[in-house]
Length: 173
Image 1 (spheres, rainbow, N blue to C red):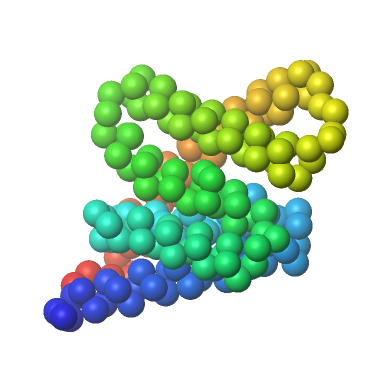
Image 2: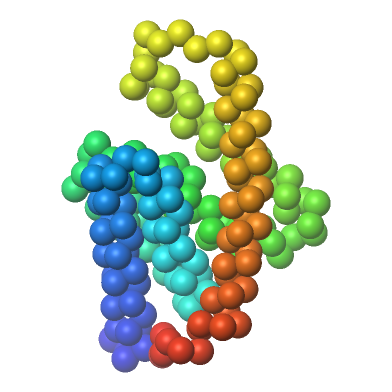
């Protein structure tokens, strides 16, 4: 194996391990579940920027599987698996498209993920809970606002990494 490939594998394994550590904090501090899922997703961004292709998908897959296997009662790991882990990888591809099409596809991906999450939570965790349509509507509106803020913040964070921080690391081959 070439030296560059070994370094890439080592960095990606380290990113995945750090992601598992971040997601494992979820059960300890319940109010930080979404924040920890977002922090773990940032590690996929590093893999996208530094290595591209399959590397970020492997970081995502290893992080998701290990965090779910090691901590099955972990909502941060579920959030990571169902949206936050793969979204930054897709974001890179989507932002190459025209702006309107990019946002339409981003919204579609987010809304499908949100519906899957709500259905899974309803069926698996609270099958007998009575929830009104208004509750779902308010949740959907709030989630849409948060998603747009998340996407814009992610774009700025990526720019900050590329222009201010990236040169300090020696990830190249």
